[in-house]
Structures are given as structure tokens and as C-alpha cells.
Image (cartoon, rainbow, N blue to C red; front, side):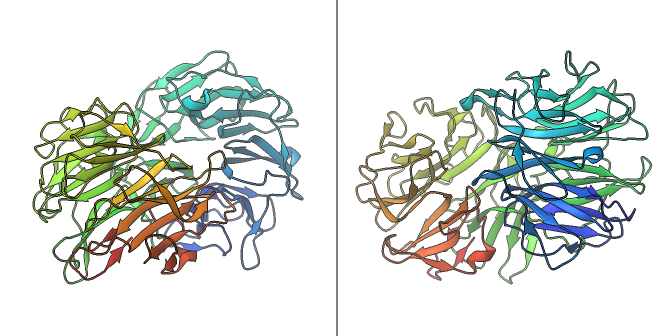
Length: 603
């Protein structure tokens, strides 16, 4: 989110593959130009000029330029590395007309604004996973950078300071595992030694350039900070716990959520008219003053992220969709969608009522029973999503990544959790037991054999695990896999010996793709192309024909060469044809195949 330099009522926001602008403080929005890649726009900055000159940092496509005229955006990556250009933050130092970018994998890059020629500015950085940037203008400027926490890379976040415009960096604290990623940084407008850091563990403050820090906000992860330049003791924070405000430099805080829908807020900005907030699934909201509540201002924006879809097994006209940050929606037999989230967003429940939907699972034996996996636990409905109840008792980690329901027992459910391993319930979630025999703590996908409920498949970053005795013993079944990051599994209902799986391809991993087993996971063979820069997000198979397979894929880097979107195979995965318009379907998270003979597919 960024504001116009030339018009006090104009604001710009970045979405997936687009930037929108409003000339009336969010009253109405229109898309600004064309030509951006379909990656999320993570950061925006305005440059001085006669009109609004914008630079947009994307998660995969690097930096793109809008010069205030012409039909669209142009790539602005000269001098950048060739692949995976995930730009998390852009800041401008006006006295030297220098732009800085914080990036995953590459650290800090810098260029002049007159013409693009990016150069690395990483001397002194202990690692290159950089998430946040802040600049104290000058010649040279003082810069602070915040790092991403990655335990498997032994990168421990941290804050880093440069007093020479990025030529050299020194550690400035907070590089501890419990603090996690430094998501946001702001500097006091008149004192470069006073800095606030928004982290995975809350808000921290230093008054001595990072020599010492104190934790001044303990309300969970913080994704964005805004410091009022006129009243610099006034600070606003945004994150999964909502929005908070301090008027005394962090000594005390007040909840600033009045009238605001609970979701993950990740962007903050202010002009003379209002404070603006951007959130997953909720678009843009604004608040004019402390005395009035928030209002949603999304006219013209399209920012719904559907993360899960399920088709009623008896009537394919009835469809359920999980929307990130908004709950569940249901399509009735007449074709209209209505919200069906009663009980899902409970302010007294986990995490303040914040629910990011990860998965939907419908009981194959009972169309009335659905399960919803979220970051705040599992929810159950026994009346086709009319009402929901939280069913997360004694799950150690309530972040549910994936769900599977026994084909013959509607109350037998498996839940894969993010960091807590696999859990099992035989009573619909009223109580759970940890499947401790599976030692993988981050399963990505789980599925039952449609005929034998004791046969279960689990996909992990280390490959595919299978049990044939209900979880007493698990075996790693990777024979034939060239890539073992398993992200999708489907068993053919009409031939349970035939199993398909999909993998995630990154530059540092061997080629992946779709693999098939004809002996219930004993051995695997890749079918179709080898993927090097996309992930298989989901797989589906025709309930009556085990050779009719569907897949969805999305890029893991930009530029990419592998096929993205939705595809169908009628020969068991050997050849594939695109469904729909591939150029409009870059990030399709989920798919489901109708079981009532209508051959309908929803993604």
C-alpha cells in the first residue's frame, strides 16, 4: 500500500498480479495498467515525478515499473539474479535517488532511480533471506534490514544496520529463534537510533541503534507497522491478531479493531483522511478517526482467495468453497452462493476468531457431514454447513494443513498439522489422539484408501509414508520417486491399487511432477513431463475411470517454463490437456471431481 505524492486522496494497493488505484480514498478502485506477472505484489513505492511513478516488488517476478503513462507495466530487473525474484520490501532514499530491495535468497539489492541497474549490497550480512527494510534519509542514508527465520537453513532472522547506504552491514540484534522473522521495521523520523521491529513474537523497540531491544508488544505475530510522522509516539501494528495502537511509544497498547472483520492484516498506511489496512480475503478497510469504526472499501476490487472446494457426493449442484479469511460459502441447487460460516468465526475461539481455511473435507458416506481445517483448528458441520462447531479438543497444534475422512465412517477423520504431526479421531473431533508412530511433524497431505480404512497415505517433504494396519507401522515408499516433496495424493476409487501423487519443484530440488503407482504405492513412475519450476497443488481422479486424472499446478519461481493451471489426462497421466484459460489460472489451490456421474470439476 502506498499513497500518491501529487494527490492527497489517491492510494494504491497491490494484489495478486495487479495494482489497483483509488482517487477518492478507497471509494472506488480501478486496475492500474496491465502486464504485471501473476505473482503477488508485496510492496509498492512511489518515485518523485510529474505524476505518480510507481515501482512494484513481486513475489517471484522481481520489480516492475509504472511511469504514470502508457498502457502498462514494464519489467525493471536489469542486474538482478535470473530466477526466483521474490521482493519483500522496497524503500527509497530521496537525497540520493536510490532504491533498495529486500529479497528472499539474495539479500539486499540497490539501484539508482534514473535508470535501472541493480547491484548486490550484501557485505556483512550473515544470510540472504531478507524480509523488511527501513530507511532514514540522508547522504548516505541509514538503513535497517530484517531477516526471515528459517530453521532448516539455520537463518535466525535478525536486524541488520548499515550507516553507509548499504555498502556494509552489521548485526543489530533480534537474531534469535524464538523471535522468528522480522516482518516490518520503522524508524523514528528524527532519530535514526530509535527503531521498532514487528516480528513473529510481537513488537520490539530499540533506542540505541539495535545495541539493546525491549519487547513492547506481546500480542502475537506482527506483519506491518505504521509510525505517524507527525506524532511519532503513535504507532499502529497489523497481523493475525488484528490491529493495535500505542500513543506512548509502546508503553501501552489498545485494540484498534472496532468494526473490523477478523482476518490476517498485512499492510498499513495513512494519509490525511484515514488509516488504511489491507488483509487477506478482506481487501481494504479504512478508519477516519478513533471515534468512528472501520469501514470496508472494496468497490472495484476482486480479492477473494478460494483455498478449498468440495462437491456434494449426491448432487453436484451443491458446492462448498473455503475462502481465505472469510469462511465457508455454499452454492445451492439454484446456482447462488451464500455464506455458510455460522460458528466458524467465533471471537472467543482460537486466535481471536481468525480462521484461514486450509482444507475442506466432506464425508463420502454422509453428505450432511463436512469438516473444515483452519489455522485455528478443525470445525465440523452435520447439517450441510448450516452451522459449525469447533472440534479441536486436545490437538496439540491447531494449525490444520489437510484433512481426510474415512470413506465408510463419517466420524473417522485424520488431520495433518503444521508442525504437530498427524492426529486421528473416531468421534468427529470430540477427542483426538496423536499418531505418534508417524515421526514426520509436517505432513502436507493425507488420504484414506477408499476400500480399506486401515490403509492410509501421508505425503511429506521426505516422501510418501503408508500404513496398512491403521497407523501401527508406517513405511517410507519412495521407490521410483525422483522428487520426494509430496504435496498431493489421490487413490482411484474404482481401482485402489492405482495411486497418483504430485510433488513440489524448486530450483534446489530434483525434477518432480505427477507420479503413478500401480501396486498401491510399492513402486512409482513419473507420468507426463518432469517439472522444475511448478508445484502440483492438487490431484483428482474420475470415480469410475482410474485413467482419467486431473491436476492443478502453480509456479514456484518466475519466469517459469512448466505448465500452470488446470489440466486433464485421459490416459493415466501420460498426456495432458489444459482446462479453461491457463493464462488466468496461475494459483489454483484445490480441485474436486463430482461423484454423481455428471463429470463436473470445480477448482
